[in-house]
Length: 159
Image 1: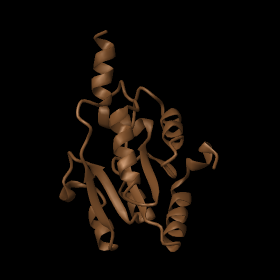
Image 2: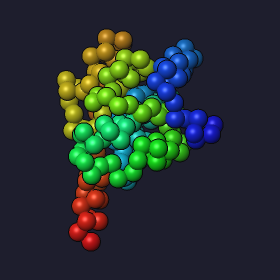
Image 3: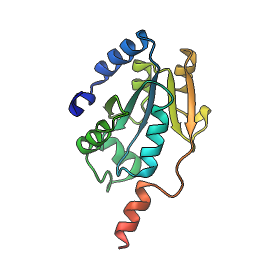
């Protein structure tokens, strides 16, 4: 599959998720800003992908990242971030979203497994209730210590 074809609309992602699940495949969903890709992101995403057969990533749009991280973010624009994620062999679909949370994406794709980082608890994960009500599961993955986009940005600023 062409890398560009992995960057899909919400409607396309919902259709893909339903098709994959109809074939008995487990769909995993996670989301984030993924501003400066680093070893922590790669480890997290590959572990998320290993939980199922197909990985869908909800990617915060540029405006959404600005609201979450501040005016100087993102460093990489949404087109670049989505292309980098889609280029990973274990990523099956990337969906940009403008909202503050990926709740609508989760409701539309209804993944079998919802994944977030270890800094969350199941009761604080957006969409957990909806996934659990649909007989899915919610998992947290421990972050690789010492890696964050913010720490990379600060290191560059202090160089």
